[in-house]
Length: 558
Image 1: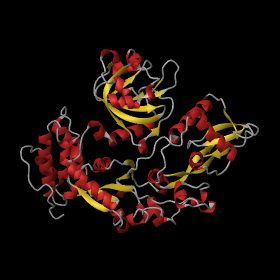
Image 2 (image 1 turned 90 degrees about the horizontal axis):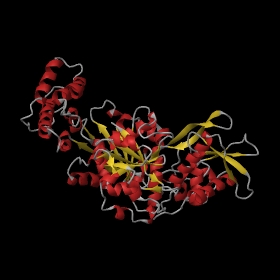
Image 3 (image 1 turned 60 degrees about the vertical axis):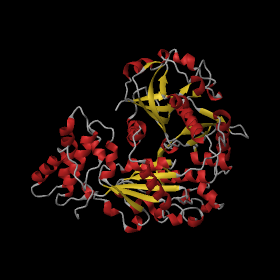
Image 4 (image 1 turned 135 degrees about the horizontal axis):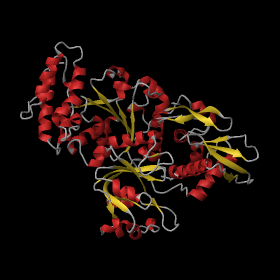
């Protein structure tokens, strides 16, 4: 896929940058000014992909609905409406349209849980390897949202949604390619939820999921050190608790990232980023580490590096609680307020549900990943009062109260580090029934989830509207009926519609079989006598596109 980067901060004649992502969204249009104008106009084609960034923060993704064109070639009747807010007083669209180029696009604004920062020094079309990998994952996960595709009728989505609301934990299981991951996303979307996402694998563990120690480059001693860092699920639950507790949304994440960018720029130019303590006006330099936390370096003793973590700054700004290094912590916080526009309250929280999707949940080792959360995910233990004695494995390293401590009223500094799963958090796991790691889900974990099968027949909805869609559905139905009649196989081995979405009319049905089905079916039948004969029967069924056999999902007793 071709992926381009588009900035959404625009400035005019030296005026402050204006964030115009909402203009893109309202107009269904993305555009770019002079810097990469020629590349955009020559190279951007319908179907290309974009990441939309504010500075270095990825805020949205998009897919082009047209080739690139000069904005001055067309008229926009809704420009005034889009730009009526005072927010855009520094942005002159009429002027921009005289020199900018753009294209129509379907634009998807990312959930807060998906927003992340990319590395510095990127161009219009070049990403660093790690960033490109993360960006591609976003497009894979949200391809149906971008393309306006629906997995199944709304009434079916409603049934799944109600099941999740009543059970809190749901596992979608079934044959490969039945769209379980996409269905999970549609359920979350139907709930209007904030979404978190992770994919389990055999090496995934507690330090990734809950919290753990992460290496940092200790710029003071030149040695590698370690720092406690929250995992993806703990961070997600913290956001859910903030929402449920009525905390007002602030702009901490954005202003903190802006300060990180400025300090990194200073480090690259070998120019100290200097601040002063509030009381005694003593100068100190800010430095960053690999986890994007700060060190304060007094200019009178440049060998001393005092760690000032992101969590400690955020806690102080939100609660007034101070852990260590008060003169430096308060100076940084005030710098964020005075010079970066930190606001404690931007708008009142809209109460939301939070859905955390665990793709291929069975591939992880449950006890190693969940640790003491093994019982906390049980719906009967959700919330502060029902799980008030749970502390995480690295709680002894917690020197300031976290949000869970605040919710529980914990004041004792020797007792920080509590954690619980808020009532507004819902978990959806997905798993393939034929995966050899299915049995790693022991009964204690299984009973904490509701289980719902997603059948191959249900997934056929994904083929609606495709080129050769009816032929694809017939081939799918006949192939799956043949799979049911094959010794050693059963319903769990049927092939879902996601595999048939790989059909390309330029190459035809034969290559779809050669490249995507034959290898999978041979793996199913590995060790079977007369495997070539069995494969031929399955291929014959696949090539029959005129008859739909009934009973595709009738199990043959396997």
